[in-house]
Length: 220
Image (cartoon, rainbow, N blue to C red):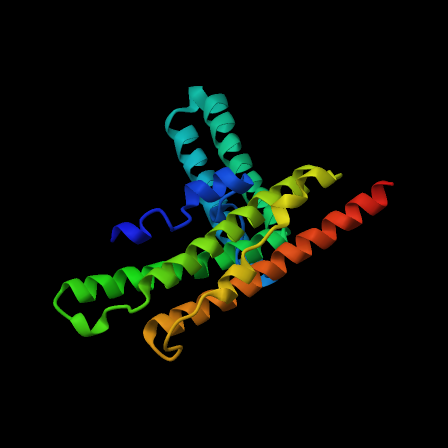
């Protein structure tokens, strides 16, 4: 990975640090079908745990209390994990932001693969106006980080103070000011996709703003 895109990717660890939960903590998409499929998996695991318990008790009958306790704890853990994921899956704003992060990271992956193809001796795939594409991605990254922080603040605090209004500042105007010579070229397409993503991120931030206003209004 070239130096100019190193550190641009938003990692799972960073996501967990920013918003208190990782993408693996919820079901995507949060649909009834997804819930049912995961519930069936959990039921299957519980059946296996019960079979394991029965076999161990049959082999070591004197320690039956220990095996019962151990396997009941395992079953409770499986059920709790599913319930926890379902609870997180109700956070639609967070799911939308995770989807935006995936798209953002996908753009970086496209650039990385393109760089590797170029380094393999295919000079014709070189990204022109590269610095402007990277600049656009940096601005989007700033907005995504800001949105993830804001979502956590709103989730953890019913009343959000006005002093944190700077969290809603976005870089969309700066993105639109970027110019690329040929919009039909590869860097042009990358920037177009980046701009579309920036608009969606801005929309998510606006939703968070509206929710914040509603919280403040109801709290008065």
